[in-house]
Length: 547
Image (tube, rainbow, N blue to C red; front, side, top):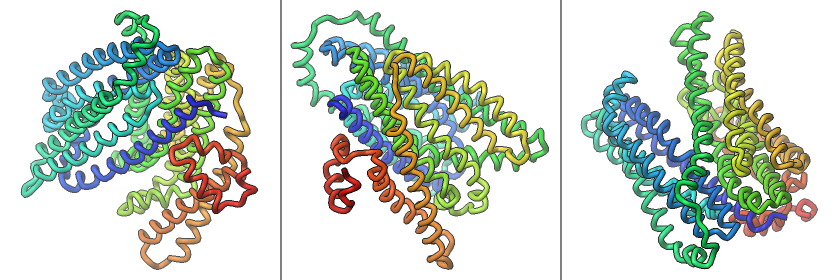
């Protein structure tokens, strides 16, 4: 049975997943009207956002995880004063990182835009630069709360940030595009939304911090008084954070290399530039945005898992480390299997639902999507193994393993893209290869340093069987609904089929999870709203399934 620490992990993962879904929806709501309003200004906005995304990783990828891990370890040992000092030192580091990022982008916007041959992007880069100052600051607060296994402040601040970003960004973009469109200013207005959103997110999480400070202050006063000096803590934070930051940059760099390989190899094999760009657009544009959705769930588990395992590891409780690690893998697989197989069986219908104006391109993208859908299973498992290694202080190993895998990915991508019949699908195959290799290397390290004994049936066989049954129902329902509604307009019929298939799939998957004993009724209590869901299931499902 999960202990209180593991219940916090499960609830935290659920909270972050819910916030992630809402943020994805808000992101879609933001980009659709923005594209319609500012036209070619989207190019300037995209350039600014790409630069922002590259730099902000330094402040959001590694340090919050380091804070989360160290705070969790100190709290479980009763060192509340030291936990608070970790947060204090990390915030000063974030202040330095944020200031540097802001200064580079604000004063160097013209230089950066010139170097990438997009001088009109400079105002958008400059407008987004304040976000580089504020985002690292409230990331330190998120790390502090995550270390206490309280994910609610993180979720609230992220949603607030996204809401304000969308509202302000769209408002300014609209003002700059009416009555006469000024593409440069419109892109800058949209970019400024990110900065205002970051300020709002920081204010909200700071307010939550102040309102919840008294209980923690009381624990500081009555806890172990010893504290480490600032330099020692800064070194520990850097030791954990730097490898994670490097690891976070590997896949974006590989995406750039992917682009070069695909574009050059296809053109060398006789494909025209226009066709090559079209094919890569199917992979990078159509499929990547959809495949990113399941990562909301797996990433939520990964973030919540670090402080949970760190707490057990700090107490040298190997039994609980093993149990929590298995719980993490199991939760990831319960989420990952249905996402992967669902996307696989109705890949083309989902693409046509999202990009209904481009049915021919969706048909071409479907085989790529199917490969990428299967890779979700390996990515989910890989992300969990990375979190386990980070939690036990082996954060260098996932970076090394991913680097080795990416070298292999380059070779696999080159060889497969060179095959005429495979073409751009080779990029998806190469990515899946990298996930599998990283996963296998990580698994070796996890077993070596934790002595993990996998619960094969509970973690993989039962959820996998339930997901296979769900996938069959998903495909069958889609075919049935589209057959019944045939003749009512292709887009309407497809949308109805996808919606019906997803709703039926969700219900069937829950039933099959209980039928295959992949989850038990009492385990629902560990999730937000679990008791209410349990009552509903007890009312409608046969008792034999709920034993």
